[in-house]
Structure formats: C-alpha cells, structure tokens
Image (cartoon, rainbow, N blue to C red; front, side):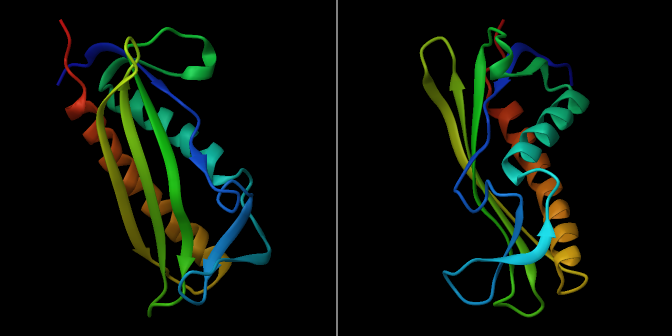
Amino acid sequence: RSPIPKTLLLGAANGGIFIASPRILFSDSAGTRSYYQYSFWTEPPTLQFIKLLLAKFEYCKGFQVVSRSSNGVVGDYQLVTEIQEFYQDRTVSPPVARVVVAADLIAVIDRKVIASRSFSQNYPLTSDTAAGAAGALSKATDKLLDDLINWAVESAPPGE
C-alpha cells in the first residue's frame, strides 16, 4: 500500500516513575514491582520505545512523513503513547514479560481524538533472570509495536 499523504508526529512515551527508570522491573507477587539490583537498561524504556516506534514507522512507510513532535515539524496527526506495564511477571509459571501500552491518535488541527486503544503483549522468558527478562521484554515490545503501527495506519483518515 502507498503511504497516507499526511505527517504523523510522535509524542514522548509517557510512563510511571518505575517504567521511566533505567532499571529492569519484575514482580514476585500481584500488585508489587521490584528492580533487579545490578541490571539496567542502557536507556529507560520510555525513551527506547519512541526510538523503536519511529524506526518501525519509517520502515513500514504507512505515513508520508513521521517525525518526533519535539522536532518542530507541523503535522496532521499526533500519536500519544503511555507505557502502562513493562515488567517481568514471575507470579506465573513459566515467567513472562508483560508490556501494556495505551495510545491515542489525535488530529492536530482541532486536537480531536480520532481513535484510542490499549495494546498488550506477553512473551515467555527463556530464563528466569534479568537477561531473560530483557530479551522477552524486547520481543514483546517488538510485537506490540507492529500491532500499534497497523492500528494507527488503519485508524488515520487517508486524506485527499
């Protein structure tokens, strides 16, 4: 398919204080989160998420232009995301990586929400370690990004 002849702006990914940290999260019991003591992301998931999203949007060519909203580009639509869950769930056997992201597609001209949706992916860990969690969280995020991009492209009015 040919790209939608519109510009999509990507806002910063929002996330709670735990998710915006460079530390890797896990849960041993419902409703709790802990950090691995000596394991860290090179960047917080909120920063990495937007970089990956931008790269995947550019690859799929769903929109004519995709840019970060902080670049000063004038756009037709804005995609606002919030990472609601990003952790290793050890309360289930075998443990899984859980990623949940809420997204709003907004028309820039009138700030009207065109579409809203929540995305969720779970991915099994190959080992119950920080490295296993990091690998599974990356794979879950990759699958979630594909779903999110397809939804955004399908939800955006095609324009002229």
